[in-house]
Length: 218
Image (cartoon, rainbow, N blue to C red; front, side, top):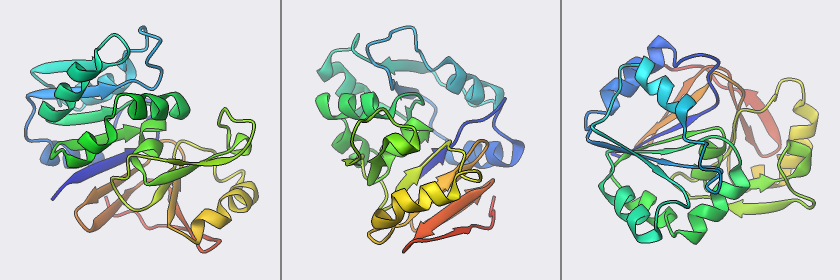
C-alpha cells in the first residue's frame, strides 16, 4: 500500500504522535528527494521541512533538492530512486508549473516511496485545487489546477479556515460537489495509507457544500 502525508505547517516540530507513525512508515531511508516550490530561488532549500524530520530522528543517507539547478532527466531519476519524496512548502503555483515542466507528476504517482507534502506541497499532491485570489493564491482570475493526483480529493492546507469559513465555503462549494476537500490550518496532517485516511489535528472536510470537522485518529 502506498502512503501519503498531507501536512499543514508545523510551528516548531512534528508532534510526538505523528512522529511515531512517520517512523513506522518510513523504513527505507536511503534517499529523500525534496521538490522546491520556488525552483528558481536556489536559497530556498527546504531547511525548515528537513529540520522537522531531523528533530523526529528521521534521517537519510542521501538528500537531494530538485530545482532548476538540476537537469530534467536527473530530476526524474532522483524521483524514481527516492525512498521518500517531499514536496516542499511555499508557492503552489510555481511548484505546479515546475512539476508539469519537468514531467514529475506521473513519476511521483508511480513511485512506491512515501510521499509527503507541506502546505503548498500538500495542495499539489491532491487531485485538483482551486487557485483563487480570495484564498490567498497569486491569481487574477480563479481557476482549477490539476495536481499530482495521488488521491481523489482536494486539499486546502495551512489556511486560516476557522476565521474564514463563509469565504471558503462560497469559493469551494462547486468543487465540493465533485470531490471531497480537506482543509486544515497549522500543526495538522492527513495520512492516507491505501484506502485508510487518518487525521491529525484540526482538519475539516467540505463535501456537497457542507463543512464539518473530522475526528482525530492519530
